[in-house]
Figure 1 (cartoon, rainbow, N blue to C red):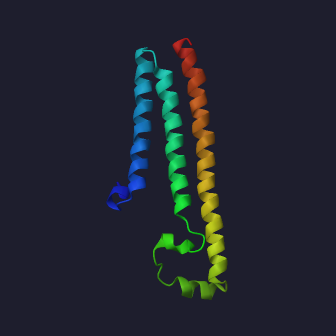
Figure 2 (cartoon, rainbow, N blue to C red):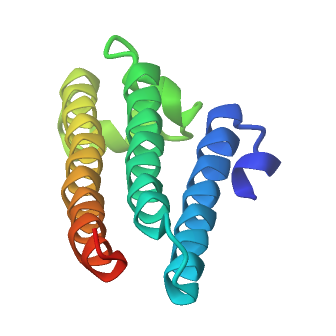
Figure 3 (cartoon, one colour):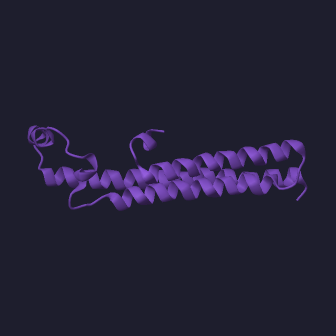
Length: 134
């Protein structure tokens, strides 16, 4: 909802995709409870879809970063120059640090999503497959 208010198209698309992944997982769970075939497919694909949505978001955020002007993402932060002067570092050093932290943060989110959601997808593949008799 915040992305919709903030007019962030990629945020709205990714948020819709993530909500769709949740709906797919719920549909698979309902199929599993009802003993209907296809539960595993829905539950595994929901995790794959979620991974793709998160990777797309992380990729778009990383693509939006301009290393030449890293603070453009923040708009025009008031008092940034004064704070940097008080800290005793140059604006270039802070910019380099910002780019590094920004890149590592989105890289970590992407990697952890692949590990955890991929692990959950694998769990669904094996465990739900056994329950379905596959």
